[in-house]
Image 1 (cartoon, one colour):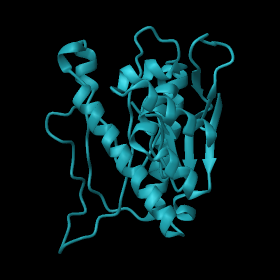
Image 2 (cartoon, helix red, strand yellow; image 1 turned 120 degrees about the vertical axis):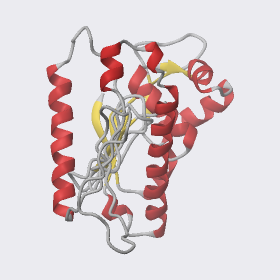
Image 3 (cartoon, one colour; image 1 turned 135 degrees about the vertical axis):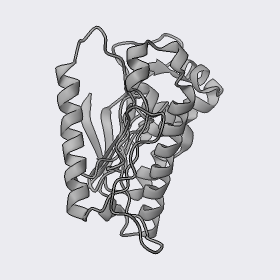
Length: 247
């Protein structure tokens, strides 16, 4: 599988911005090759519907037939890339690109909400319950500071993934990072908003998008591009953004 699919055409980004397509792409990135029927059962859609959207994803280069695991009756599809990436600044230069980026950000938020809804503390050991969750902060940063935050988070995620590769206690973890400038109404505090009560750990909203296997993916503003990866539902964006998958 290739590392990233770099998109410069807003029309191609809008193809994966479809809510079902981004979920299908994320599932293929996070769960491996599957048929339209298998994916249909997972997302609650007919095989005819998933088959159509899979063909559209293949048409624009996001997925391909898996030649190593052919099914005699049905095509088996696989993702071609770990992430989808695009340049927010470049995309935002046209109304069509601006709309596509906004839709992708909303898809990432939907994927985050889905992951939170599906997470059941009662189904996980205490050591996972202790560390899972979300946190949010409100801080004063210039664009360079947000870019540095995104870059550091991105590097740390890669470092930890490599360090714990093959660890028997590891599980797929959905991670989101994101940061957006806040239009002030009056005076806003320059101090961090802090962790949300009841959430012992979580994502730092310093980056706008992101793709981890299984979801949309998300952007880390450590670069000027965006990414969607397999984790979230297919992808994310950055100024360079990156995103993963969707579920």
